[in-house]
Amino acid sequence: MRSPPPRSKKIARERIAVLFCRAGEFFQDDPLKSDRCVALARKISMRHRVRIDRFLRKQFCRHCYRFLVPGRNVRVRIARGKVIMTCLSCGRQMRIPVKKRHEERQQ
Ligand SMILES: [Zn+2]
Image (cartoon, rainbow, N blue to C red; front, side, top):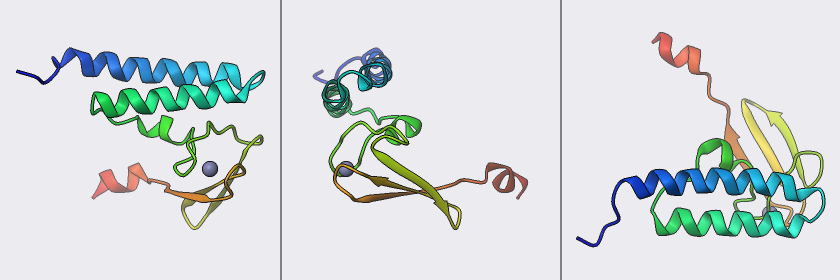
């Protein structure tokens, strides 16, 4: 039995959420600390094989893994039902489809 107990996944998820919270607090004074929080959160997610929650995944760049703050180092715009985020650190884009939950449920 080498797999970790199921409880550790819950703890891992909580630690990831806390790290993103800290990253937000650090950003004003020291953005590098925020980047380190993201790196640590990714390590935890890989080690415990848990996914980083969808709303947290929008808070870092998928390409360079920097912590992103709208209006500071990421440009956010909405086009054709998609949120397009441009990372100002690496200049690359992420496209996130906007889900229309009400429409899906009605079917
Ligand atoms: Zn980037």
